[in-house]
Image (cartoon, rainbow, N blue to C red; front, side, top):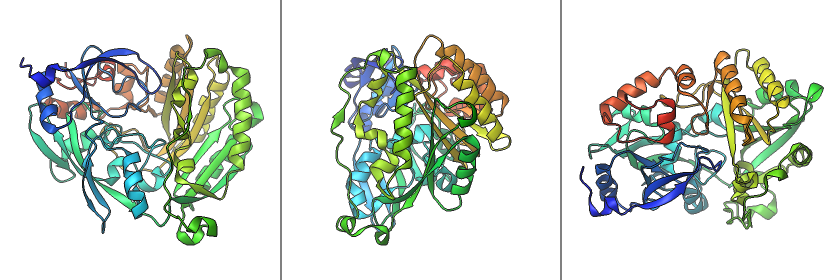
Length: 456
């Protein structure tokens, strides 16, 4: 094996997912050019990593090499007339908003944080509050360039190397290193949203409100009280919104309709003690959240509408050193309402305290081979790590699989290989593409080894 001077100049770092798990030692490189990336391909077991917002072992590679691409974040060109941006894969949604929102352009598809890179958004085929209208991230990507394990740089699009294009969306960075991408942005008049909040007393009311919201709003998400039981099961607040036009704004906001957000000033500087999240404190927090959510203003800035948690630096430290997972699944619309109820009941009677429950509805837009979204209801729950959590998620996995659903690989922490392959039958086609482009398994991760996303 060849070892160039740059390739050997790695730093040993302890990395984790956003849930502060797992804590693993990796050999980290910080490439600044395509040449440095390809030089690293002489090493074995590589993995590209963006800003580390996947929740668990998606972007860790214990004992092996991680290419942190945060320095590969240059904008290469921008078509101001059509809103097409070409940028390096380490560019973040925050970068795009900061520089282009004042010009009237905004990311077409965004998850619940702006601190994700374009490469990471492709690798996880991220989605947001508007999936029923816009689909997942693949729908805003025109093409990308990727460095393959053999050192070739190729363009992948719907027409050119289409198998490579579709396999990378949801492919978790396991086929090569994405270098650049051309993405379509959305033309906007303001950086605000016209929003409406609807309080629901129970799950039936909430699911009906979600169904109704699809007719009039491009974006919607429901927060559920994780501690509500019995007749109040599923109580929560649905927040809906559309991009605000200039005419929608009150006079005081019209002076700066394309205002961008400021850097957050609130920070959680240390890991909070584990006892701060318990049944009592979570119940109190849910009561406060319920009141705050249903009193939302009619006009909201994009930071509050899309990225409320980004307003607190290092908010993940609030779960303490033990860490947390975000368990997200999707269930088909057929029988989905009753199945959501069954799983929610299972959660509320468990010994695992859910801190945050978020419910959305997906449309039927096409994603990549291993993309998570599919038509139906998706539910995301934050759980602090406890000794009982992994066995409990195994129980939930079995329920989700039986109901015809699947788990989001971009957030998963515990899924086993057999369950993954049953949930994602497309893995067989994906592995054939892996065999074509990376037959030596040069690209791998802790997750790929855990769930069998590699050649054997």
